[in-house]
Amino acid sequence: MSGEARATRERTLAAITAAGYTVGEELWPDLANCSQCRAGCTDSPNSGKRQ
Image (cartoon, rainbow, N blue to C red; front, side, top):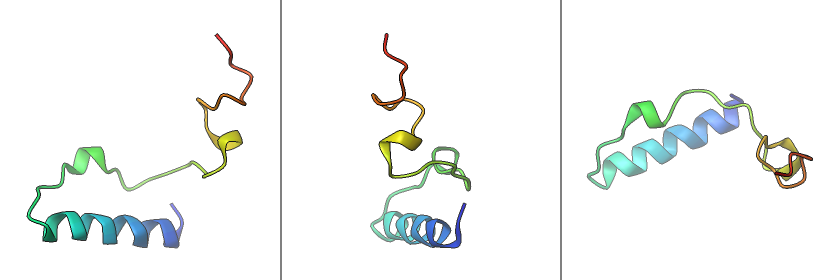
């Protein structure tokens, strides 16, 4: 996970906690290997995996 992505994750989790919610840590793993580009997603409609 890039430094920017890690910082965004931490800010998001802090905001959730500050709002009084409990964070399910198992739903927010400290890793990511994706992009905002549809071509970078494994379930992208552009990936050629049409069913």
